[in-house]
Amino acid sequence: MSKSNYWDRSFLGIKYYKVQYYVKLLLYKSLGITLPKMMDQRNYWDIRGHAFMDDMMKSGFDDREIFFQNMLIHELKKLEFNSFFEAGSGYGWNIRRVYEEFPHACVGGLDFSITQLMNSKKYLENTEIPVVNGDNCMIPLKDNAYDIGFSLGVFMNIHPSKIKSALKEMIRVCGKYIIHIEYDENYTTPELKKQRAFKTNIISHNYKKLYTDLGVNVEKFSTYKEFGKYYDEHINNISTRLTRWEGFEGAEKYIFIMVKL
Image 1 (cartoon, rainbow, N blue to C red):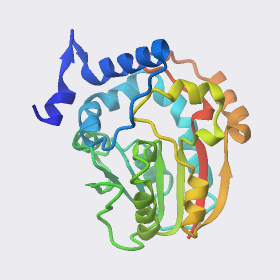
Image 2: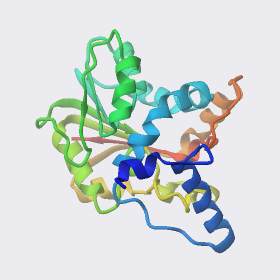
Image 3: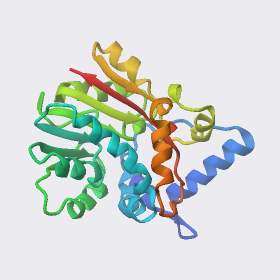
């Protein structure tokens, strides 16, 4: 059985990735067992990507996640740039927003999930946003192709053995700035760290140290301790009901880091 067919299986009508989620949760809660992090998530996201857009848009998730997208837009308004791309653009939610907010800029996207890219054709319809199939560890773009590169909750899916390759590729492809909104367990709450311990698809990286080791200047760094109160205000103004099967984690799930090249 191919890896793709393996991930596409269902058990009692439930997608296999959801079954695995609950099995891993049970192992962790009952026996304290954590399984190794996934080395490669391409097949996982090809399967999960089928439903990811609907999961975001119809579950109330995007009403909550837009807080972090707003953080990006707020920061971009302070910068001078002519081009922007997202590494791991999914179905295009973030790049469409940047395209609409900054009509002067050339905006592009990259993702390794074919199903996410198929959904992006629908979501990005009537725009001029190019998206390409590619791996963040081997980005199919020329040197300094874009002024700004960005990721939101994507590099936390890259295995520790590959993360430096991905960051080096971002440095190569971006001409001015790199912005990440990602998970770093060094700057989260003990509760969330424990809550995410069993998840084999979520991996913590110390972005501040990694970029410093690569000789890149960290221009801005903030955590939930700085933006958490604004997140709480945002949540208090939401009227939609959250129905997403995994729920929603708070501001502590991300750090904000911007490096200047």
